[in-house]
Length: 260
Ligand SMILES: C[S@@+](CC[C@H](N)C(=O)[O-])C[C@H]1O[C@@H](n2cnc3c(N)ncnc32)[C@H](O)[C@@H]1O
Image (tube, rainbow, N blue to C red; front, top):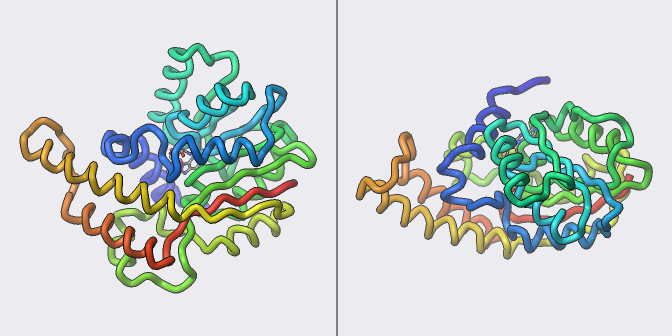
């Protein structure tokens, strides 16, 4: 079933200046270091054609094309992010290896058996229908193609201290435990290859966000930055709660590699 409001809320947030101020260009824990790890796990080469699902501003696609020489197609729901990625690919002279287009992970605009591998970083948790997206991944992968997922994980039990803040971060509220992601992928037809725990990357990212929130709040107070509608009180409370939940194992970050 379509849930355009959650999807659009997510795409709008990640297309915003506020997201860029907090997260930089790479919108996932571990940044391009963890993207490089995925590239190695997927054994990318110059012959690989990969799909980056929810490619954001293209940072991972640029990194993989430059590091592995592979061809990368990026797809993202945010027109804003796709336009920025296309402009940057041209500026970097990577236009021959890269292409970006608007599209929905649950209805990928590509033919069957098109790609050698797929990456999907910090986005699967936001998809309202994860089984539908997983089946789409299977459909567009070539036989034996690899999927490299990196994503937020959350314990099955409710996290009361976070629940009250979930409306603010509606699109990550549906993160699942690692084993649930693995089950969804298995049901779609994937075989498990590797699972890695990268919770440390999430702790570092939340700490960085706390520093950036502090700086942004001062810049807004000094009228050097204009961020209408941002409630710094809620944002700081959320970051602190998320840090504690990560440190006590209720939130985490995992890499899951599977084969079609
Ligand atoms: C946390 S960002 C991650 C971006 C990128 N993968 C990265 O790591 O830098 C989540 C991205 O998912 C995109 N997104 C959310 N729902 C989507 C969907 N259903 N289909 C495609 N992209 C989606 C958002 O627009 C946003 O760019």
